Image 1 (spheres, helix red, strand yellow):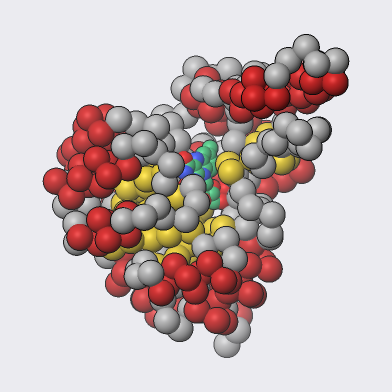
Image 2 (cartoon, rainbow, N blue to C red):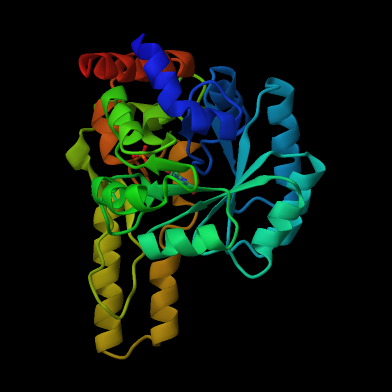
Length: 336
Ligand SMILES: Cc1cc2nc3c(=O)[nH]c(=O)nc-3n(C[C@H](O)[C@H](O)[C@H](O)COP(=O)(O)O)c2cc1C
């Protein structure tokens, strides 16, 4: 009975995505590749390939390989500032990709039309109510609202607040998926009751059996608690730092030392501003790959959300999705 209630609350999301449960696995660079994406979709959820900085050729292979592993729908996440964005959209079109998620800022000129021209549904991130309305007017088909509890690049506002500000205003008109800090089904049930069509989780799926993340990366997730997933700190206003939530490690401490060092060199005029800013910007280049693929959990970037405390063991994607849906159903059954 309560399972029916859950499915009814998710129906708009499942109809939109073409899957059984409206749980998307958010694209995670290096982690969301053919194996995890196909496993999520095969388990009834919705997998999303993280294109990141891939070339069109690499994306082409990744989509083809994912299709080899699942005949269910999955999406592709493209970053707005990728210099080859329009070529990547063509690759998606050639593969008949049904859903494209645009991340990393407002869609650049022409990109919404180009994506919709492929026949794909377009999902965009709305970091505030005004932008949600703007995106809706420009023709996007669904929104993700992601709060600052999430892993990776984050905005300043918590999921609980974004959900209250945005869902009552737009969820009647457009499917909205809530992301950031979701680790259990009870939270999924409550966002659905607030009007969400579904949810997007990342952190909770990193340690899945099917994830290719290095065993040490997974171990770091299993050991960590919520308070270990901290936001990168900007030490000097002249040296902008993009906020990223990740598990604290030696790399984070050294990043702070580096910022102080570069700031001191700016004070003593031994470095130009542009060069100083570049040194900070480049500090984490390749760091996620080093951690996820090579297992360098000391110096690499351990992007993780606060829900990391709810990652207790390595388990299959199907078990994670079954557990989340059971918790959500049970929570709904208590409502009577
Ligand atoms: C390791 C990691 C890498 C991520 N990489 C990306 C990315 O490349 N593109 C993107 O749009 N979001 C990225 N995210 C965010 C996820 O897609 C998702 O929205 C987020 O993890 C949801 O919040 P949660 O971590 O609290 O579950 C990343 C998150 C993690 C943990």
